[in-house]
Image 1 (cartoon, rainbow over the protein chains, first blue to last red):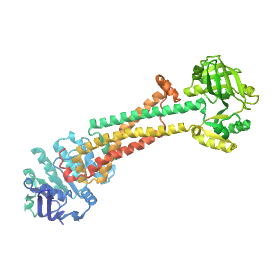
Image 2: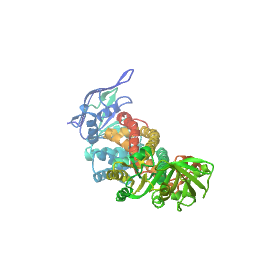
Image 3: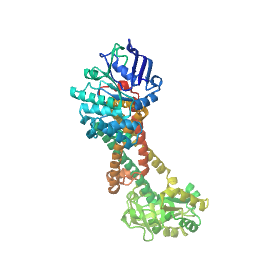
Image 4: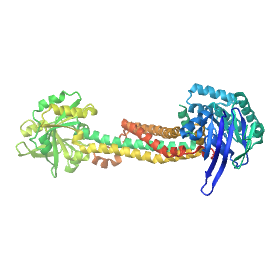
Length: 227
Length: 405
């Protein structure tokens, strides 16, 4: 059973003057353990597709089934709960909470999952160690480099034991060396834990690493529809 | 716990902005508490002064005397009444008064006065007349009189001057009697000083040819909280022809002043908090607008909107209580300092004296004010946080994440 299954998904943004169709009748399946990238020019619908898969935006029509759950019929509370337990997010601008330390940023997800203090700290430290930042656990984001912040973001995304991680342009703000290092980490996590990654990107370094490249053009899948 | 830490850290995200609202809260509340302390202190001084002048805590009269104030309407069986009074442990002391309306005349001027015949020893334990003597001595020798400074000035008399009192006796005939001024008193109430003269009950007995009629018994009690209970129990023990009243019954204007003072204090503090509410809302609103992207991330990764709402309410509570606690401590410190040092208002003593207010003011804060203030601050914090919190929870994560910080 695919971990992500999209059937006949369309998205129309109702601007006041002219409705804009961002996605047209998308059908897509992502299997457990895939390391895939959605690529395409600006405005092709990459981010919209990731937002709909992440339950952050609603499809105008169609069905989104994640880990066997149809999220298009979920109410907001159920959707928040689903995101908390099943999806990990990595954002382009890292988006760590600036007042929290690296450890607390990772711990916060576990706090939302109602784990006790010891469980939270142990798990968060384990993840920071995994991303090579155990000695930066007490640093705030402003005290970390861009690459280090994105590693903390990866640790945060992994914290809740998600079914898959959605990464929206994760290397866009990183230099070449740091981007390669981050991609190494993600690839290792994919291999070690079978963690499914779905990227939205224009970055050739990511495209080069991806096992499957899904190309969007004008809101439709031009290639890479099948695994 | 983590939520508390998170909310606490959030308020220090922009230190300058938080310090400004904290300082405004602290200064506003310190000033408010000190002002409330002044108002309460002024009112309490006024009440204490009136009680010490002769109002006492509880007074006993016949119901007829309360209505007509005639010399014949005295308290019957005074010894048995006194025996009943003495049984009550809350009664600290008592004094008896014979009160007759009459005229006091000097060589040139006459003035209407209340002639109060007292037992000087009993009087010392109840009123502060003996301590208010500014010239001469207290009542010691027969045929001596003590009068208020204002009356002395009006009658143009000095110590050892002769004053003639005239009043209607028990049979209605006018009695004239000459007294020598032994002392001149000055209290906090110029009206009292201009209206009252004190003589010995023994002298009045001699003039009337009978035991001086006791029109009034004044009691001092130990515990003001038991005042109504003591009053009611005494009333129950004594004949119905004797009316037992607390100072609040006798002086409803003072009770009204107390109620108005309390209400004014709360309105005053409420107005300060109302003004702070807008500052707090503004600070929280700016803080929310600064963190739109963070809120988007929190909502995206699985934070419930109600939890986000609570977090902003918590931030508001932290902000207002941090400033509030500092403000209350400063205000409390000021009140404690001036409670012992006093504030000298002698430059306006003439005006204060007309209202029976002492010229030395000792601020005081009742403990219930802190409780009421806490409730008001909680309400202010929650109201102030409402709009920013609603703004935050209405964010769509997909849009909020893309906001440029």
